[in-house]
Image (cartoon, rainbow, N blue to C red; front, side):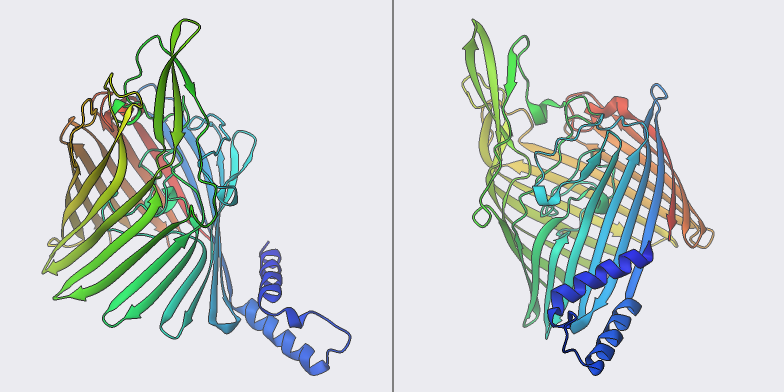
Length: 461
């Protein structure tokens, strides 16, 4: 398998960067020797690895198996000529029980260039990342399918919205696994004491929302509204942006250090990753009919981050002002079922490392809608708090974590205790619980019946 990967990568490298090296009748022996030496150097600079994960998740309510999954993440790293670094990461997934998505293969939110390959109901494979990196003097270039991480919040996101998210398991997945990588041009240029990052994203991919009847289907009125009873519902296909250049996303970030503070200033011009569900009420065969027409809408984000260390205490935060967002309303006079408004969101975090082998983090999240329209379902000000505690034992071979996230408006949230044991340098065992609480109206309480215990093993190759 490694030999096949090696020579496949070599072929790509030769075709991309050295078309003149293709065999021809007048090649000299010296050129052939040089070519042979070049190929040998490329082969010697290829690193192939893989991470294998096995996960079993059992619902605590009725004891049903929610997930029995095998994940394989193959990875290739190579040093190419002209000091170009190449990386590729794939993902193969096999779920033996298929209870999360119920075999759904629809990917209307994902652009054709970023879609998963699906075989039957339980097997899928995906090119997660593939990019080239190169320094030209002090300018850094990264081109290809990748993740762009803005912000430093844990649990919920404020600025980390460049890449859309797969909500297959709500927010339980690690961010690196739940983000959907995008085909992106990423350029970083130093300007005096600042670093300017410019990103251009022609990949028109958006949040992967769970389908109806999926385990983590959204049912909270804050997200889907309050459909009236006994009314027929017709949902049209999502209207996707189609223009390659005009419908691309773009952003710019400045980062630097000032008086001990790490600062960033960010701007993103993008389509909001959640489609706006415009509705229209009509009469069909003497009965009321609601037609829903989902559509992605443009938005502007202006924000930034800050952090500083004071001994064992780190104070950090991020903020973002979102223009032209849409919120669900329950207002008879509003035929669209949504209202447009701006939103200011921020998170303030305190990280403390005053106890040996222990890390404690406390965060406050708030989202404030600029005005309160009639029938607004969510509160004008939504507040959440989170607590994260981790501690290591036995020379860092045992790692324990506790995550608690609480919504202050609806008194719902979740607990997530975990423990992992490093059996060897490349084998790790895991045990954890995912526990929701609250009413069906809340963002977290809607999954109150999805509590589960999970077992896992990770093997690095």
